[in-house]
Amino acid sequence: MDRPVLAYDDCGFCTWWAQLFADRTDLRVVGFSDLSTDLLEGAVTFLRQFEEYERLREHGYRFAADQRDLWGQFVSSTPPTQREEADN
Image (tube, rainbow, N blue to C red; front, side):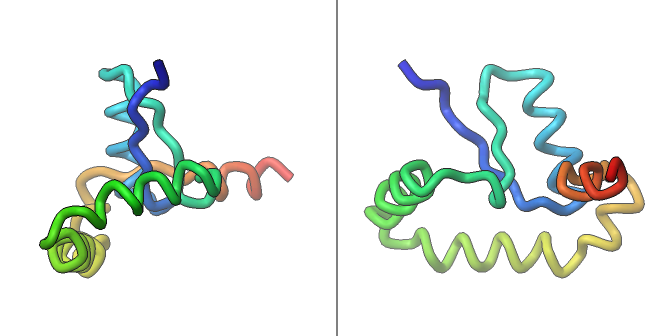
């Protein structure tokens, strides 16, 4: 059976949380930029069956995203895409 997947936004705040989940759970952690088409389509199909999904998703994301600077003062990590650029 496939492991559940946690998809995260590739910003420092989300990367920090994704790493925490990766270290402490059996979730497969995948950045949005690395999501396969099948995984993305499956997630969207599943979530769209819930009536309030879109409204809650947008509200929750906007709340966190609008305060990234604040959250990033407490928890942050370099996103993988930025680590790869620094290595080159």
